[in-house]
Image (cartoon, rainbow over all chains, first blue to last red; front, side, top):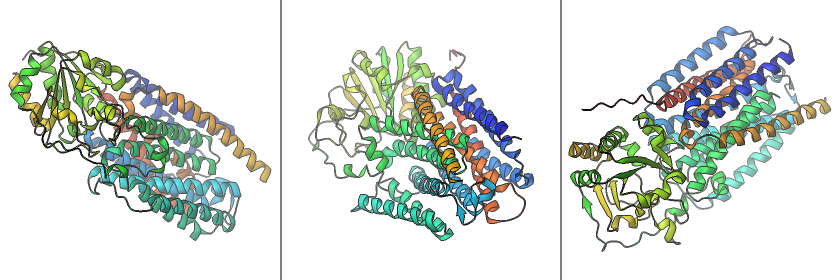
Length: 463
Length: 104
């Protein structure tokens, strides 16, 4: 196959990937988009297999079958509530694969047309080491993010003194190593870069706590794209550069949306060292205030007599696997003639769009699921807000209390509705460690208990 | 030789920036409800680095580079299959459901 033919086929593949992302602008076109993505990938792989230098079909075929079987097995079995950790795990694979490809190019540059061992061009060496560096960070960062999301590692932010200084010094060390590597092309320096980058990846994700995970997952998504880009530059392969840039841009935008949803600057997100400053936040003294408690029957009664309800789900719903019971409750209320809608905060859950997927899994029609901007002005006209497993994203302190760590964060204005039903396991504060004054308001009724059980009990009471 | 490689680099850089701009606009057009599938699909397509891994694994023989290539192919394949399938699963949940009003 001629070089031009290859370039054209790679271009088609890249266009397919662009269409794949474009398809996601609407649920109806999204499935076609996914097919475009698959077709693009098949074109890319077959084109590469046609290269004259590619001869070991048996080994490559076996590798694809083994990897494909593992991937298929995992993807078919995973619970939708565990999506965030799955995505984190997949990011780590992209990162480590990028490292392996860079290493392969370093050990056998001739196969990639970038020179001979010991005399690789300077620009190729720089690109190779940048790809390796980002790939290795993506790998270790994602592994740690996976551990935190899965619960194998404590989700609490680990903060120590001079964290930023140490990270900055490590970064300087890596840059120096890259310079040395470019000069002497030594394998030992190459692997030192890999190891130090892996260390940096751990250090960057370590101080980030549970509810900040949507930002981390998006950030690592972005890094995995830039890693692919770095490899693309090394191999002078436009398909890799385009795809890497698309993925990098996508992750960066998601990180931006998530950090905006938490009123944090994108810089603090990229540097990774946030979540820590909240640990010391003061909790106001609310011991003398009165909390109105209710049970499932009260909630059922209140909602039955209302004409509109907005349901605000959060991570607690995912933990309790309450989405199906919740949808059942919503269905009964709809039959009772209520206007039932769902309000999703951008950072609800542990990854962007996490709540939307869970509600979709429970067969909630996506037309009833609205974003913060779309529904926030409707709360004053709503009789009941049903908050389930969400806390900080409803805390009015974000608007009124300048000393609050969450001040400035956009919130869902549930307090403006006539009645707030708040499903919660206990009076414990939310992730940010801030007390929610909403609990003590006259129009709030707290429903203590497991989210799933509470929904099921309400369903029983409604029947 | 040096002139040639810098030319290749500049072409790469051109492609890179244009792709970033396309990515910027395409991703902003993605509806927030589909941000999870977006991560799934970007995850799958970023595994297009399998192309590099296949090139490394391609030649006959058993050198270091080839072993790295094979490992790369396995890892990227996990991601390609896993990423597209999990995205498919997510997206099929967003299908418009036929209205079934069971009155029971």
